[in-house]
Image (cartoon, rainbow, N blue to C red; front, side, top):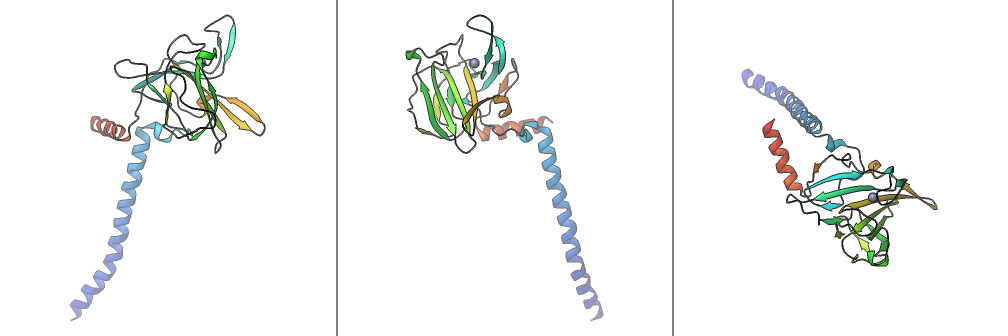
Length: 220
Ligand SMILES: [Zn+2]
């Protein structure tokens, strides 16, 4: 009889004790996994507002940065108001889809046939963030009108070299609305784009990204 009571008391004391130890083990493994995951891939904690890229492709690079540069199609020094990106598929094709980096409304459309230096271009405004993105030099006449709504990931056109351009690329230009003023900003403040001449692989597909992460952890 006494023995039974001792066993019952023992079990009553042991259950919360085991539960607490179990919780500590689970918590520490979770915290450990999170810190390992964050450490192995710096892009997870990049701190940039946007992670989605403006094209569907396999690789991309930067060919000309935002800021002062020598005029590529004329003389002297000019201020490059955007960043030039070139995206391509594994087979080298540069005729890749240009996609919207955020939900917004079309606020500017230009056509190469009208002689615009921007070539075939679209500008999309996101009223939530107050940001504008202009996509220039696209291959075909934009299939959008002013005030059209676009969703993040919608195809806006095909990477091209229309207007004032020396080769197939995307001129990606950003502004921000500040009260009455529309102010030019450096896209690098919002996107983790590669350095000039640095090539990066693109993962447009979450599953593909997951597979590659698994491959990486196997190699480790
Ligand atoms: Zn440019």
